[in-house]
Amino acid sequence: MMLLRYESKKELKASIGKPLRYSETSMFGEEYKETGTFSGARRPHLLGGTGREFFASITMANGLIEKVV
Image (tube, rainbow, N blue to C red; front, side, top):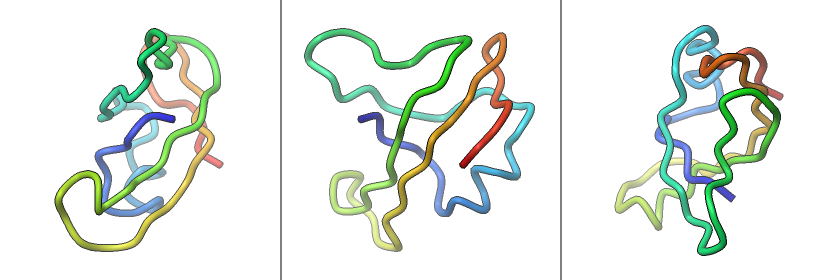
């Protein structure tokens, strides 16, 4: 699962139409897809910050965020 670089799901949804800010975590290859759907999470304890944890399903189209659930 990818680490999302957003403080909240609301901030992520407000970024629809923009490139995704993320960090890869998989040892088996990239999870990011320029066009497609994948899952991501904000894990503050892994990013060295504070705040809430959240999970999201993200749909990308041509390198831009199209939908967040």
